[in-house]
Image (cartoon, rainbow, N blue to C red; front, side):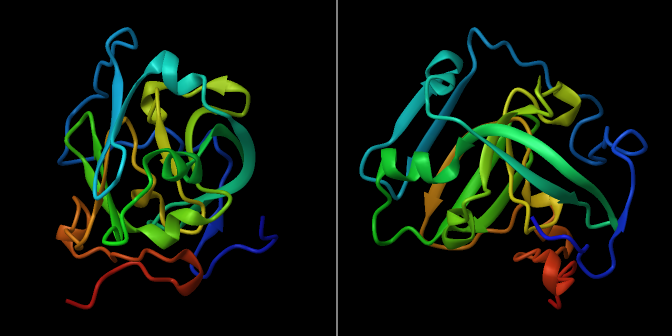
Length: 193
């Protein structure tokens, strides 16, 4: 974890601004029944899978400490996320050589895209616990993506489907002129298109 903040960011206590809304998507958090919840991983892969909540919790987990950076300019430091490394799913589904990008679809209709190589970093997780507690629905529970070196709009909440793809297809915020790469260390907030 980097000791300094990315350019244009300032630290806030988690308690001040942690329950973030997503205007324009849905007015409230989606209701998710864990008995029926599944996550599907498909697309340009050799072995597509669908996992139940119980199945997902059986995967090897790891705790990662990282900072969380919002594109609005605030950051929360030293969060402890528990979950499954994205690389674990990569090994399970075996992406084809044609797979270059990954689309995340969420229970509220939200989508975001990332380059596959950006998801190979050791601190990228599919997280279900934060600071030792189950992830609340308001924070993306039961399962959210955590990509510490990207702005938070890339850390999709309420994930239900992960699709490996050949081509870029802009997600919710990228269609609204936010950066596709969203690199916090390059202050890459908005697209030039």
